[in-house]
Length: 233
Image (cartoon, rainbow, N blue to C red):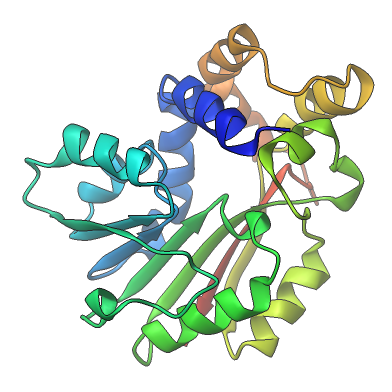
C-alpha cells in the first residue's frame, strides 16, 4: 500500500470535482468566520473557495502539496501563507496568530491519535472559535478504498460526538452529508475491492451533484457517506 501515491492520485482526480467541492463549501459556509486555518489542505481543492470567504492559512504535512497551493493561489491577497504541520505534534509557533475557524475536511481519519489532534485544535482557538470537521461516516463502509487512502477509521455518529465533547468542544451542528455517495463507495471498495475510485465515475458523480443535492433534502432521517460537525470552544 502506497498511501501517499494513492492520496496524490485521488487529490488530482478530485481537482475536477468542482461541483462536489462547491457543495461541501456551501454546507460549511454558514459557520465560517474571521481568519481561517485549513488543516490538511492537500493540493487546494477546497482552498480556493475558502479564500472567497476570508483570510486563510493553509497547512499540510506534504510540502509538495503546499507548493501546488502556492502556485494556484499565491497571488490571492487572502492567502496568509502555507505551513508544514504534523497535526499530531504540537502546533508550530507560526500558528500563534489569531485563528477564528479551523476547517479540517477529510483529514482526522488519517491520524492514529485523533484525541491529541482535537486537543491541539481546541488550544489554537479563542473563546467562541469554531472547529469544522468533515469525516468519513458509517463504520460498516470501511473497505479497500479506506485502507489504500490510509484511513485509520470511519466515524460513528455517537463516537464523533463523544470525542468532541471529551476535548471540550460544544457541538453546535452535526449532520450526515452525501447520502448517494454511500452506494459508490460500497460498490467500488467492498464489492469490487477497488483501491482507487475510477476517474470516469468521479466525473459522472460530479455532474450529478446538483440533482443529488435536491434529492438528499427529500430523504427524512437520512444517513450519509460523511459527517459534518461544528464545535465551538
